[in-house]
Length: 76
Image (cartoon, rainbow, N blue to C red; front, side, top):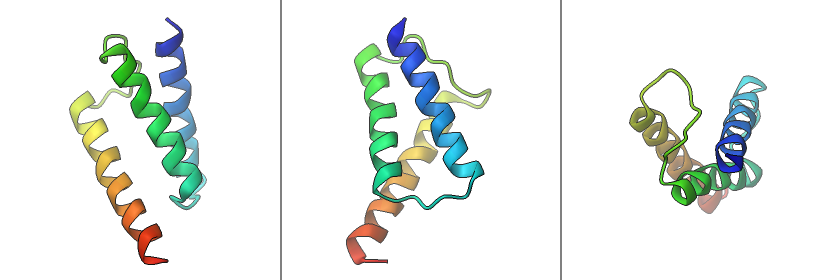
């Protein structure tokens, strides 16, 4: 139960980060990795995510993670 709650709260934090148009920086990457870790820990059993497809939602986040990591690596 706690993993599901943690996952939901991290999801909301990611949403707020986007709503506030904050940069996808190291803080965002740490938050996203923590969010993904909750899914690995629970094998995605109790996901409290948006109404979108879970696969689509996670795929989008992973794509954004790759972009953010590339930008940080290149010094942008």
